[in-house]
Length: 321
Image (cartoon, rainbow, N blue to C red; front, side, top):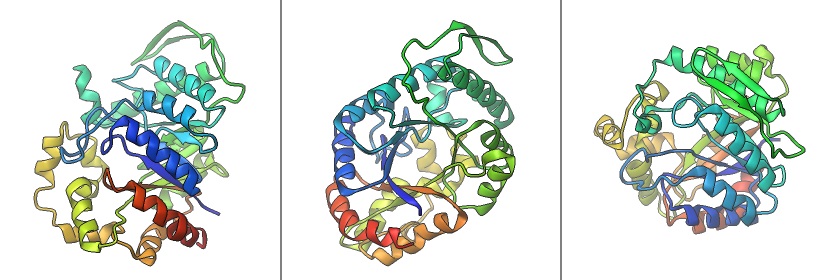
């Protein structure tokens, strides 16, 4: 059976509100949670970008049951992989073993802030391979000296580690990343319900491992209001990752999405109060073989009503899948 999770979207709510929202999600019965790790929002209308790792520390203490996961952290520019390993080990302790480290090759939107050039996709994948090697060695308790093409590590060791090593997930979008995830990850992460991603991951060594997807939804008693909100804050998602990974700023996403109409967003994302519409647009992830699907309720200030509706209507309907 597929599990359904809740997304703390750092780009749309302030940090303290994200923690309160997660407490509600735990009470509503969501099976797990994920958090975005951004330095900037996609669009100015979202308006936030708190530090995910501080939020995770607070969330770990404010909740009791719900698992936590980064969706995703990029360990190639803004963070050095040795520091990512330390952060993951610390959150695993604070959460009592409820944490999973989701990794990916990142987006220019978040990584350019450190003043380094944005590498081409092939180089980013090389960097991610090295980063994963460093992180997994450190999480395994090894004393690490590393000399790579992109990263160096000098005599590093994690002194605080939970008895249970945090699982490592890798975000995939094509054959190369699926191979990397199948060979090195405990979890596959994707944002598109493509069966071929699952198939490539499994054939590369990922058979039997969890596969986590994500979809944005816009619950509102009025569908037109929900569509307008989804268009205002989430119209960027339809650009695809080949575009999304390279645009450098919210203004770039504003320009790239200027001609996208609200009805186009409403056709792709589930919007409004109709449970069946939401179920049918989430169903492709289940049919593609994803074992977990994280939901993003679009819009700060619209989480309370979503939680009530999700607990009473949406989650029971989804579990019927």
